[in-house]
Image 1 (cartoon, rainbow, N blue to C red):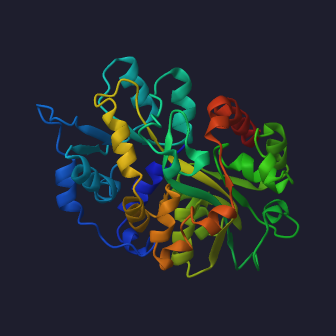
Image 2: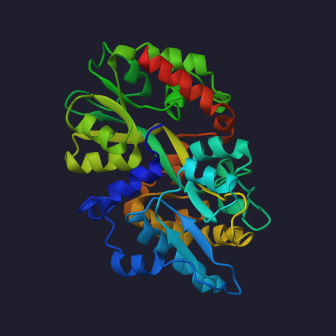
Length: 364
């Protein structure tokens, strides 16, 4: 089903020089932090159960360490270890079904929730410990809670698309000839198509899958698809597409790398959550919820924005975001107001079917 946002971001941050350009972030002192966070579990448990957090590795390990691990350990006296091997849905499922769970928290998303929650593989979020007041309300789900935000946005080549195109222009091949680029996944692409077809934001869900696919099929011969963030970046940078939908992190870098030739904005974008999920039967038990609550604190979330460009999940963090970062923060009040918020609850019930229909449509 292609690359997920967390996987792409870990890869993106690993590129030489990327952190200097991504929102102007500085280096994080990766060497010493990696050595500390990749140490294995101790033989004996402390009074506070050790928490193992699995993310997508690379420079996301020191970024999470600075933003989340160090504040958690100071606050609780417990220990948190980061496993950067990648919390794929297949690994989580295998662990739970074999009663051999090693992870307490996983950096997941809408697809993870859709594929795992319905199979009874995740523990419900304990909102007696985790505060719903410290997260965007729409992104607090029964089996997952927002840990950061990102966006799917439209970008365009200013040399071939003058001005600022509207969403409807993405489908107007006469006005702006040329190829269009979309992600090879139903998520966000269905929402984009339905909004372009005139569906009001407040009536977007439940998604009319057929209507959205019909809209995309109307320009099928002009569509290029991408599986990875790197592909999305190259298709626009190299001029193969005149407009495209991609993650805001890639769009931001494209604007920098092309000196403004590739432009983008958050207008009519799709705001999406990264999600903390807890595999059922996690070793640390309730302490995973204590860790999530700790990671909701605004300073750590702003730190993650500075290092990785992930938007804070806690609305209270907005006041701490430096002025120079607000324009590219997907969850800032102004940027969030310009977008629609994805519904993981809808995808939990319909992702499999919508994905298969989407693939059938673009392959026809």
